[in-house]
Image (cartoon, rainbow, N blue to C red):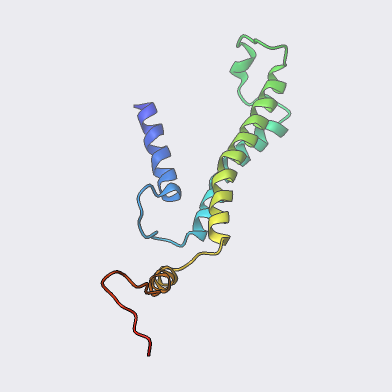
Length: 134
């Protein structure tokens, strides 16, 4: 149940960003940049606390076995820095892609229709048509 709830929460979070099916967005796409930015704030707060803390946040780690020669506090600070960096990149990549799409020049549907009509307006004579020169 725990993993299923994590998966469901992740799908619900990313659904408005990805929009897997073509649909009209309920909110302006610019709001997705704010949505992604605000999603990083809780993790940034926790990561900053773990990185800059001068005491171990979870005393139970003192009794845990260590595989590296790092102290418990250094291990906590490295884990906080890793979390801070990875979360920032995970949210920065989709935000950058979305910003590039929003800032790129777009041709409206009407412009596409007008362009296709202009391209098709050139009439070439076929076998059934004859050209009359007046």
